Length: 113
Length: 113
Image 1 (tube, rainbow over the protein chains, first blue to last red):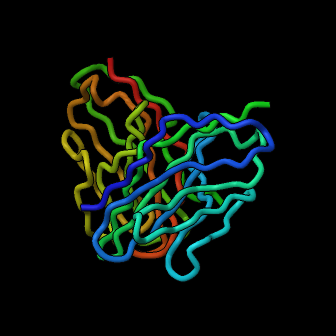
Image 2: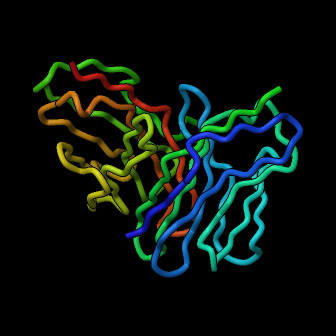
């Protein structure tokens, strides 16, 4: 069965600094990987996805993520953090063999002014 | 365009009462999902439906039932609510199995007293 781990409950970054939110996964075969963001009292919004091809994928709001097959990781990154990036971030994995989408526990990102 | 619509947005139940959470999508998606979100637990998959007429258990199906009424609608039923089912429930849909991301509703905040 597939699973996702987000090892950090919270990440604090100063505004203007680069940020990384970590995600590792476990799934048989080649995974489909996703990042979502949740703002307070809102549903989840899609940020980016990895399906195949280039290991660095770019998404919304200047975010990007790096897929590393040997480390089974899919870390979310941004070169320069904004205060408005403060939110709850979820990593998700979809097994291509079925239709389940499994999420991690989420990482709360605080960008400090 | 409405996307994924959940009703109700808020609900308070007494222990032992039953209720049905409604979800409808207008994007002609094949796949639909129900998740619950609890602090520190992330999003956990309750049930999902890969297509009209099919449903499958997710990570935490106990105490819930679902119905894929047609392609648009996917309902979640609590037959005898328990305080442990206090949570925020999200419905999501996706275009097909595989590479596409899921789109989320705004959530239903359920309190069982």
